[in-house]
Length: 266
Image (cartoon, rainbow, N blue to C red):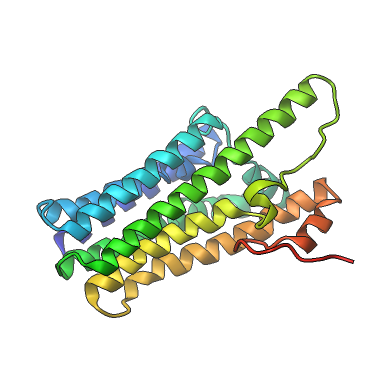
């Protein structure tokens, strides 16, 4: 239980930091800047309390570190650490009364999202409590996680390349050939990066189930993360549809999240 108490106190400190920093800076994206960092810390805390001697926990810690390194790199190259606020918060701020948005900032952005970052790592707590030998199912989970990590890396790179080309065309005074990405992985999913992100954390949840030998309450983090992505997808697409009328055709043809063959549209 000491390990759990330690990560809870780190989560509380993260909540306070994100809220105070948002008030001081007027920028509500501080949770985004911690998103790829604190889960790595939490899992290593659990692995550390096992003396770095539990193969399953060590594997989970290494995998989550790879996840965090990839996400940190992608977030940094988009300017996330140089004061660039998530554009969706600016849109939402314009749609809500000032007091309402500040309550949303405190309760959802600063507290709930930090709580979620703690919850998605709690399968490591289950593994700490159930030190079973590393087995075949663990090996399968490792391979799946790495496959999903590669998938998200490819999706983010395709998106990065597209926006670089689009910006170059606009800077040259030309109309972009496409206003949003519909090729590569984005031809079978409108949000392949969302799919692979969730899949990685469902794989982490699977480690907890494997350790316990049964379904455990610590899968709640993966469930809540999926629900968060559902809401994020709906909100993001509402903004995209308002900017690009042709997005409706793409939306009618291509699966929202789970990669699937495109539908024929009359």
